[in-house]
Length: 194
Image (cartoon, rainbow, N blue to C red; front, top):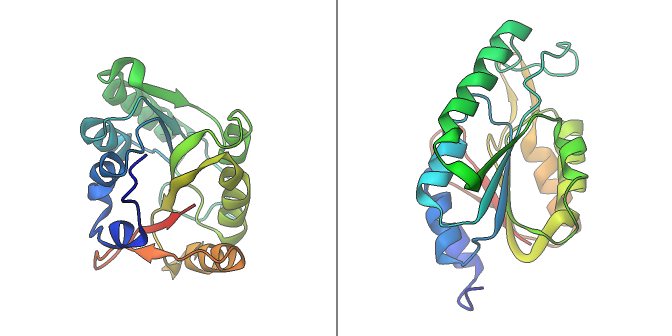
């Protein structure tokens, strides 16, 4: 573990594409998880630039009722299958460092021991209750000094029912943790040292 780890290192990240480099810099090179994979592009990016041992890419690739998951990623079953196959083909090039888990986030979290994950990146269901459930279930899985982060640090986007910012802010304020935000003009990511 990098003894120079500090909040300034986390605060210096400008965009999510820098996440793998930050993980390398901080010595967080064991196990990482991306929740909400869709086509597999961000998992592929992480694996290209991160020196870690294993990335688990978690997504149910499942159509859900709109009242449960109001998002452009919630597409019909046949499109979910196309995305699943594309993600699998893309990530296969990374060999044993990449493992796909076709499961809902909370269900997948139960398969990891507590204090076993260096980084989790949450980009699944963005509704407030879903984000709170993700945070509550993945937080215990984090190693001390790890990095918990996610995408779309906003509330309410168009017709989508996003509650990411509210959930993240409340969850980590209760723990006395600082939330750092990337500098993209839209679709910012959030990062928290745990």
